[in-house]
Image (cartoon, rainbow, N blue to C red; front, side):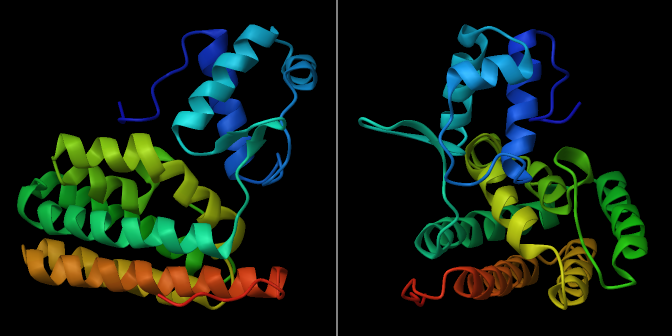
Length: 229
């Protein structure tokens, strides 16, 4: 069973997972206010269950609380993207370095198989959407690092906020083909047990992804002053 995608056993778990999915995929809009009353009606659960779910969403960075406003879904901003992807570049680069040493031959074979499956999705160049958990390329490498502290920081911390940016802004257009090619290079470095190259390629890959999403944010919000990294 994967680290973050445990089977929901209670109404609270199920509601949390559904809310998280809807926020990541934009069904619940970025920046929107969350009403316990409205959500309890929509999801047919008590306000207490909604309150617990919102608290858990706050822990995984998808929801923020502000005085006199209450709980809101985080907004997708250029500043937020820059801060998030600076952390991601460093930590996932480290994960790739460790994965090149610690992933088993079987895990690497499964990673290669995953890319083969993904090729079927990207060969037409339209989209590169990956579900959360084991079918996500980045998730596999993070788990493959075998570093529990690093896994917790990434999976329990920023993983789903990263997915929110990727799913809503980063998984379509010309970037699809280049991102897939970068994934192939990273896997080859891991296959070759080359930690330094794996880290360098992962850091570069995340930087390119950040630049791609940043350019889309500029199109959506051209009045926002662009920050450079």
